[in-house]
Length: 207
Image (tube, rainbow, N blue to C red; front, top):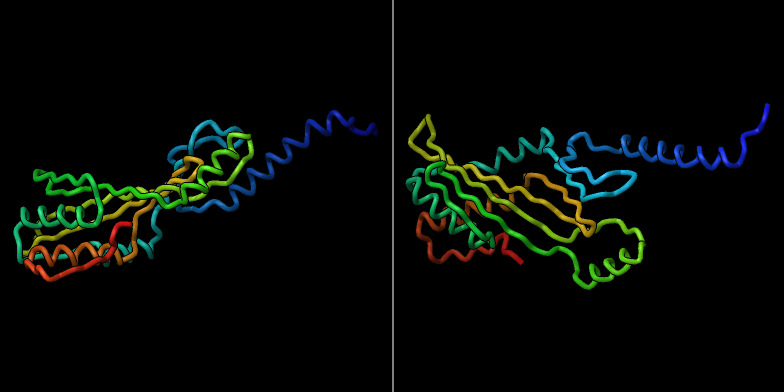
C-alpha cells in the first residue's frame, strides 16, 4: 500500500485539529447558556453574546428575594420611591411608566484596569491573540407594581439583569439572583415610604 504523501498529511491535519476543537467545545458547553450572537468559531467576524439562564435552584432563590408586599403606600408613591432608590443606587437614566406601573433604569461601570486594557489593545494591534478579560459591566433594573388579588397590598417585583463585556467585545448576560441587591433596594424603598430621614443605608453603593 502506498504511503500518503506529505502534501496529503498537511491537508488532513488542519481538519483533524478543527474537529478536535469543535468536539471539546461541545463537551464543555453549559446547558444553561444560549448564544444570542455568534461571532464565528474558525474566523472571528464579530463579537459573541451569551445569555446564561438561571438553574432551577437559582430561580427558586430569586423568587424568595425579588418580591415584597406593601400596604403602607399607593402605587404612585411606590413608583416615585422606586425611581428615587434606583437613582441613589447609581442607575441613570431612570424611567417611570405610569400606564404599565413600571420603573426601569440602567447602570454602567468599568470593571477592568484602563492601563492594562491599553497594553492589551497594543498587543492585539500587532496580531497577538489574547483571551478576553472583564472590562465593563452593564446592569438593568426593572420594577413592576401590581395589586395583590388576595388582600389589599401592592406587590412590588424587582429584577436586576447584568451583562459583563470583555476586552474582546464579547458579552455574557444573566439575571442576578443573589439577595444582597434586592434587600438593598427594598430597605431603601421602605425608608423612603416610611419617611425615615435618619437611614444612611450604603448598600450597593456605586463605585
